[in-house]
Image 1 (cartoon, rainbow, N blue to C red):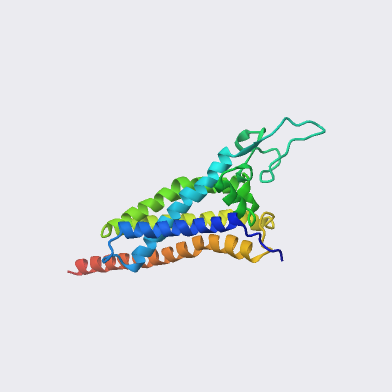
Image 2: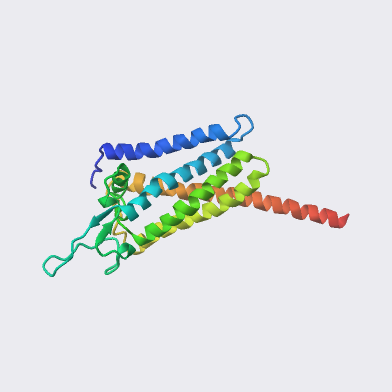
Length: 245
């Protein structure tokens, strides 16, 4: 079993997630009433604020690297063929550009370094894997705004909670589908891009930072199921009483 390389980039990458969580908590203090907000509503607000910030800041930076960080390629020759992307099928080029290789691997920003750090566990995130990019486009431009809308509904309280639960179901379902489509292609192909050779890469980067988007959405769906069935049962019971009267 190999040992992970823990350096300044590793520490800053982990601290960035903690900073986003603290920002989400701060937003809950600002937008939710202190004395009338239940612990469950506060948790849901913090989770969705955290979710939105992760999507916009971290995963948004991943997309930026995919589209704007690249290595220019010189024309190939028989003696010196041009490099090809390890994350694309043969003869497939991201954005149709045969003269560039895209991804965080070629970026110079702190966010490029952050994704190169995570790529120690899942190499696809330093290049231009088409499945990952497609999922992240949905995550950043669809899931992120939905998470913000949920926070707004929760902050309104009262009638806003019904709308919040509907969109929480939509978002939780999308998060679970996104996780499935992120890892299932890897598992079906023998996980060639995953490094599970040490504790940090396997249990912190891959397991912890991905399964929190499994357990919490599953819990939200469980809670929503209970609320929806209870409301419908009460509605059916009321309708039966009216018919009998």
